Amino acid sequence: MRMEDSDQDGASASAASSSSSSSSWSWEENKRFELALAAVDERSPDRWAEIASMVGREKSAEDARRRYEALLEDLCIIESGALDYEYVACLGVGESLCWNQQWFDPLSLSS
Image (cartoon, rainbow, N blue to C red; front, side):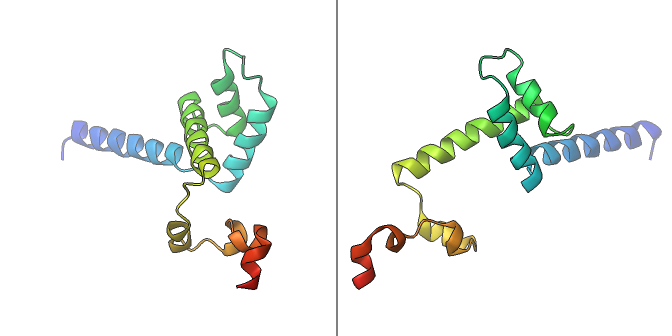
């Protein structure tokens, strides 16, 4: 293997690692993201860069912006009532974390 090939492979691996680390969010990163959203003025011209810096150095301004857009989409799905609860159940999420119609509909408790 030539030295140039080794360098290119290393760069590719580094880019792939960077891409995967920025696309996956830990619980702690999500929590810092939520706190940063509340703290940073939405009119700030550097909003996403400020939020990213509060989340952690592995997240870019673009990562923060994309995360926000994904959260807005999720919120729209949830608020529209279009969430597929059978799919959520297949993910293994405990019922305590999911909407349960019986909790909010007293008539359904009698059946």
